[in-house]
Amino acid sequence: MSGNTEPEYAPGSRAAIQAGCTCPVIDNRQGRGYMGIAGTYVYSGDCPLHGHYVVTPPHLSSKGNKE
Ligand SMILES: [Zn+2]
Image (cartoon, rainbow, N blue to C red; front, side, top):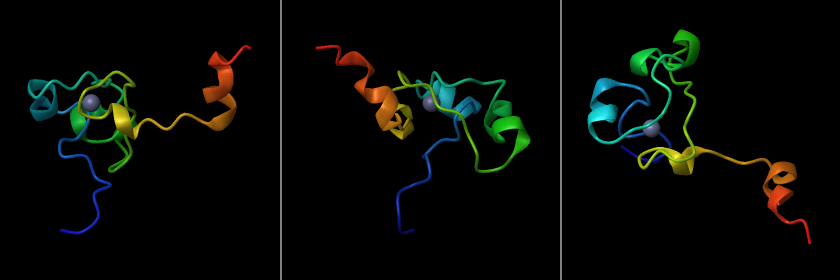
């Protein structure tokens, strides 16, 4: 097992939810994948398990800097 890009639990799966996952369940087809596409998931930014997988595009991350 090398590389750590795969989530320990599939977002939206029952195991993930029991571990505290708050990612969309329906969108992830209960962990089977976004729209049923294996390996593709949507993540919730405030999910304690998967929040760090959310990548904010640079043009959006500067949104809070209004100074
Ligand atoms: Zn999650």
